[in-house]
Image (cartoon, rainbow over all chains, first blue to last red; front, side, top):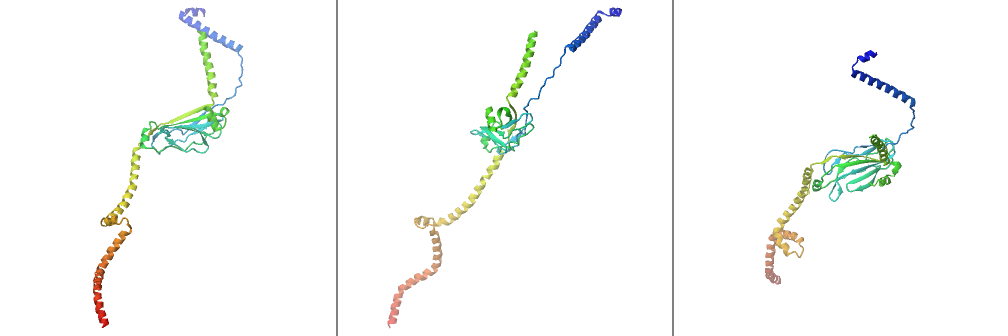
Amino acid sequence: MKSKFKTLSRTSQATLIIALLLCVGIVAYAAYSAWISKSEKSTLTKGDVMEMSLLNASATGEVVPGQSVAISPSITNTGTKDCMAYVKVEMPTYGAGADAYTFTDNSGWTKVAESSGSVTYGFNTVLHSDESTSSLCESIAMVEMSSTDFKALDDVSITVTGYLLDCDEYGTEVGEAWSQIGE
Amino acid sequence: MKRLLMAIVVNAILFSTISIPAYAASGIITKSYRSELTKGEYAEEQELTEPQQPEPKQSEPTGSVFAIVVIDDSDDPSEPDKEENAAGNSVDEPVETESEHVITEDTKIEKPAESEGSESTRIEPTETEEGTEKYEE
C-alpha cells in the first residue's frame, strides 16, 4: 500500500490526500450534528389572506356617442377575509366637465363617491370568502354629444378599479367604510 | 467583511418580515383594468341625422305654397278692393264681390228689364194718365 502510494505522482498524491480529508470532514460534521441537534415544532396557524378577482372590467374597440361598451364589472373574494367590495369607474369628460360615459347601476350597489370623470359604487353586503358581487352594470354607454365635443376628446378609454376593504378594520357599512380611506 | 455580510443578511430578513405585515395591515387591496377604446368615425352618423331635419321642411312648403297660390290668384284682381274696404268687413267682401258678380251676371238680363221698366215707369204716369183718362172716361 505504502509502496503503491509512493509510485503515484505528486499531483495524484495531493488529490488523494484532499479527498480523504473531505471525507473525514463530512463524517465528522455528520457525527457532530447528530450528537448536538435538537428538534422543536412550531405551532403556527394560517393567517387571513386578502385576494380578489375583478371580472368583465375591460373592453377594446371603437366607440362613438350613443354606443354601448360591454363592461359589466364584478368582484369575487378569492381570499379568506370578509371584505367590503367597491368599484370605481374613471372616464373622460367633455364640455364643462360632464362625464363622457353613463350607465345604470344594478340593484345591490350604492354610489359612495362621485366627481367629474369618476364615480364609485360599493356593494351593500359583506363579501365572504369565495363569494361574488353582482355586476355593477350591464354596459357602459358613451353619452350623446356634438361632433365638436367628440373631436375634442383626446382619450375615450375607461378605467375600472376594484377594491376590497377588510371588514375588521373598516366595518361593514358601505358608505362609512369608503369614507375612511379618503378616496 | 464578515460583519458586513451579516448586516446585509439581517437587514434583508428584517425588511421582508416587516414590510409584508405592513402591507397586510393596510386592509385594502385593489385591482385595476383599463379599457383601450378608440374613437370611431362619428361624421358618418352626423350625415345620417342631417337628412332627417329636411323632412319637416318638405311638408311645410307643400301646405303653404298651395295656400299662397290660391290666395295670390284670387286676390290679384280684388287687392284694390281689399285695401279700400280694409276698414270694413274684409272677410265678407270677397264673398260679396263674388256674389255680386254672380248676381250682376244674372241681373244683367233682368236689370235692363228693370231699368227699362224704370224707364217705362216714367212713361207709366203718362199711361196712367191715359189710363186715368180712360178710367175717367
